[in-house]
Length: 124
Image (cartoon, rainbow, N blue to C red; front, side, top):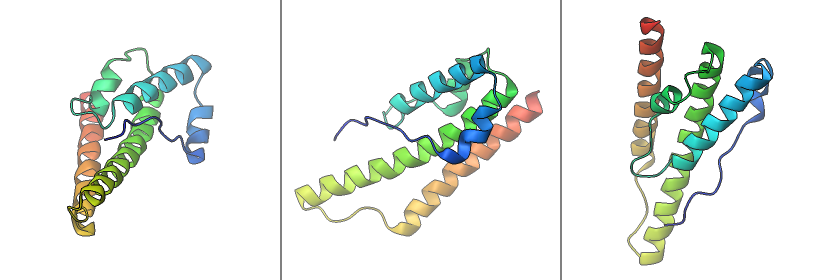
């Protein structure tokens, strides 16, 4: 399977990033690159593990990172699905998981992110 070479940053995140001090923007960008490069790998770190690696991040930066990493995760899962479908077509093994199954997978990811957020706010 091809190795992932990029991740997307969406314009609708700009106000959130713009509100951060320059140093925090640098931490955010570094964390996004680390998460983006590891996303899709078998032993990739979770979003909370990425956040733990950057203790100098403020709460605002952590929140921005959480949202943006969630987008990276979603986009990576979509990319992996396309790669797998392409490989199955190439080998003649049929199509990928049904749309409903992908929807349930996305809901599981969102539920985990919500739990991580709720736990984070309870701890502090």
